[in-house]
Amino acid sequence: MTARRRRSRGDGHAGSYVTGKGTRFFWKATLDQPDGTRKVTWKRGYATKKAAQAGLRAALVASAGGTWTEPSKRTTGSWVTEWLTGLRLSPATVTSYQRCARLHILPHIGAVPLAALAPAHLNTLYRKLEAGGRPTTRPVSR
Image 1: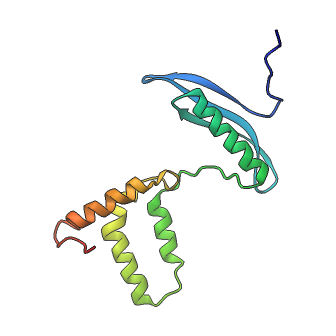
Image 2 (image 1 turned 120 degrees about the horizontal axis):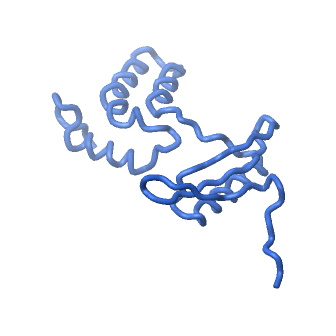
Image 3 (image 1 turned 90 degrees about the horizontal axis):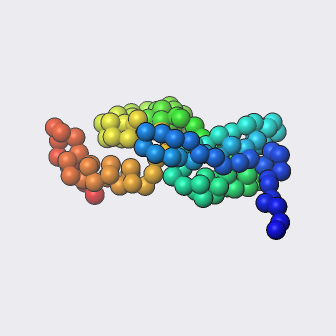
């Protein structure tokens, strides 16, 4: 019988923890950052150990390739606001974009973390805008 192979020190590991909804899984690894430093990083919330291990492998590959970035808690609304302030267009165009963002985008998906923004969020936003737009006006055209 052969001994079970262990990961090398620093290769990371996947483990479990218990929540009110049951057992969840995490991974922990020391990853190379884009600025050349190394940082211990955790990612929690996986439903299965296989999913946590897959996430660990993806993070290790991204770290080795220099493309790893720490997930951010920044909201979609803060990103949209920053993007709008950096536009180099005519003032009337920027004002129009700001109005559309304030009336149509920010109320619906402004609080969603940018890292968690998914196509489903945008599809839901589009359906809401098609169905009713703003409460005081007609629906947004297709």
